[in-house]
Amino acid sequence: MKLYYLFIIFCLALGSCKLTGTKRASNQVLTGHWLILYPKNQLENEAQEKLFAQLQDSIMRPMGLAMINFTKDNTFYFSDSLFGKKGKWGLTGNTLVIEKAGAGFNYFNGEIVKIEKGIMQVVQQLRLGNENIQLTWHIKKINETSAYFKLFDSSTNWWRHAPAAPENLKDLQKRTSAMCAYYADYFAMIEGAADYFAPRRILMPLNFYQHAIGVKRYDSAHAFTRFYYNSSNAQQANNLLEDGIRGLGPVERGENYVVEYAGILRQLSANIAPGKE
Image 1 (spheres, helix red, strand yellow):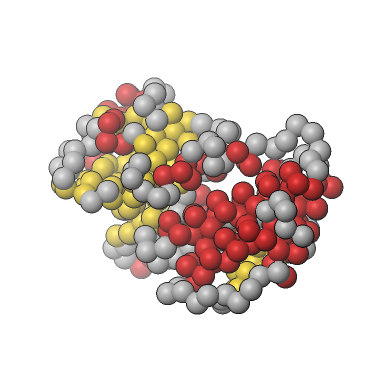
Image 2 (image 1 turned 45 degrees about the vertical axis):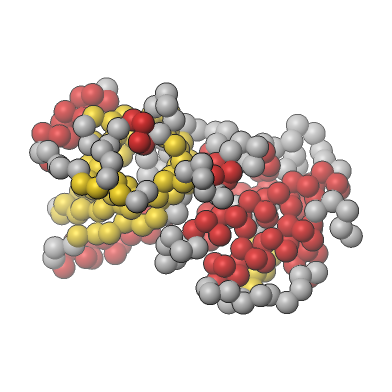
């Protein structure tokens, strides 16, 4: 079914919704980089509470704290898939439709009800069992003036491209150090924007503890391995992380764990960088 048919059906089903805030919904306003913060739900009865509790993780897993992109040519993608799968997005009035963009966005439609102070609110109607549940997604725009705008740039994400040949120690250090630096900035970006963090967003073999980070044992099935040429290089990189963790100095206590994780990953990036032994 084409997008404009979907727009018509959705608008007829929900009726018009007045947009509030300082900006109206438009392709120009939406184009750019965004961070999905959280959804607020409107549960009306016990049946809805039970259904949502059962499915909350499957809803949050693909979308919570995800970095997403709306391009001028109506391409939509996750930053985690910067060099991979991309979908399409469209806007008619205040109705946003996204298709074929991966989990959570293979088909998504919602009504943009507010854009204010860089936060967009999108109301999504979910049919769970015999119940209709309303979620209001809060999504933050990351503008060019932000220190974290670089996280969406291909030059900062170069490590997501697996190499075409085995890498030597120096190259492995550079790649793994860049990953740590990227996720340090990611943690710094979400600090203050959300009251939780999602370890699954970190595509590295790390465990997160109170005031500490640990490295998991090498697992050839972990997503981390896909950023390296082969299992041998991936295992070497895993060893670099273990050595880097052992070389960390005292952890500077922050206002919360997210701040501390950002600091630890910056130290880890420096410990792994080429020239360090």
